[in-house]
Image (cartoon, rainbow, N blue to C red; front, side, top):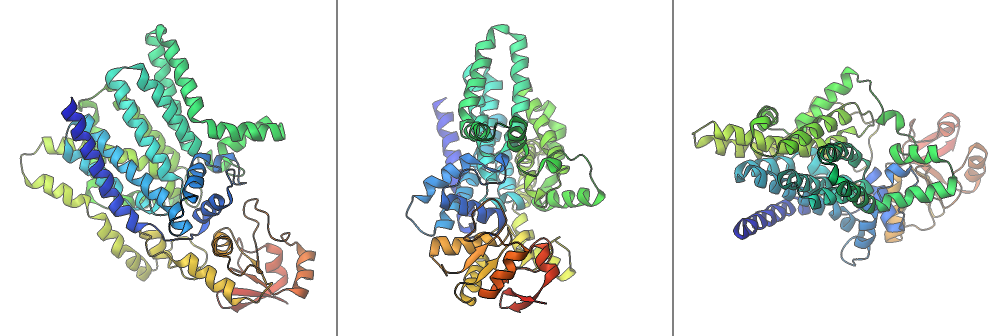
Length: 501
């Protein structure tokens, strides 16, 4: 037993180090666009709530970020980005360990871990400030605990499962999907043996402790508003995403895009091993309850992501990809058992390493072919094809370049009206690097207090008499409608100066 534990520990640490060797050089060096920039800005300002509804607060992530902020090493934004790299590497090590202790084979575990590590979406979100790999690090740990409970039937593992799932929900509401499945499993165990009700109660208590950071925000908001339905809606869906989260209508375009997302994430013939794993899992050795639960989770996370409609929904397949990688390992195990050829393991491993080669060439090919990525504008210092289609972000200095260019080109006391994608790079440069402090950067994204009130029609008329005013992108959705209707815009470097018609 000791030798087995020692060997698994060595394998785990090896997988962790190898994943870090991929993700740390891939990590973006500083400021970022959009939500990632917002997370950096929230960490810098100690903002645990965020102003976009409770479901988008992600308190556990930001508590970790606050701790990272206090480490006086290197660029602040890079330190925050490294949270994702470390959590991504922990996920890979967890997936490797789970498949290895389950199947007792190293090669299928390696196939599972490599396939997830080099998958487009997961790799990309291990290189930028995002909450997703923290979730998967916890979720993959959940699956290890789940396996141990199903294998040993020891109550301590069920109690630990409740705590770990609570932690996951303190980071992201994705955790409610496994919670529903674990809850059904716990009720099933209780129904078989009514004497286990203290364990069930301990499961609930442990979950409550794990989810405390999120529960605190929920209670705080209720005490402030006394509006229970609104608080519940905010906790489940955020301020304006209920219709997306509950959507059941799927258009052919969405379905096709989703298939492309999955295909690009597993850009290898090994993607077929997922189907082999689904076929083989019933006859694969291991606890029946564990196999049932992970199969249900695979289906639920697939359905959840496939009918989601937010613009960045490709990221919502990440839990499904973690489970798919496990099924790849099961499929690889099934395949290797049915062949005596020494070439098959080599071929499977080679296929596992193919995706980076695909990602190297795909952006140029897509750009040359004029493939639409669905973006409405070209942001300065950003090649959309490389930014979206290549997972590595080590050379992503575009947000920093944009902020420096924009803030340095405008006169003192100017006003820049920015959108949710670009504003955080500008605020980051001002807050972290004290750049152009007299320039007022305004945005109506989130609930951050602007340096002056965000202008309406009359206020803008007065401001134009005393300030130079610029926007980043004078197109619908990125500049207020009244400005587009009543003003002209003259290109000024990487910004657009507002002028009266």
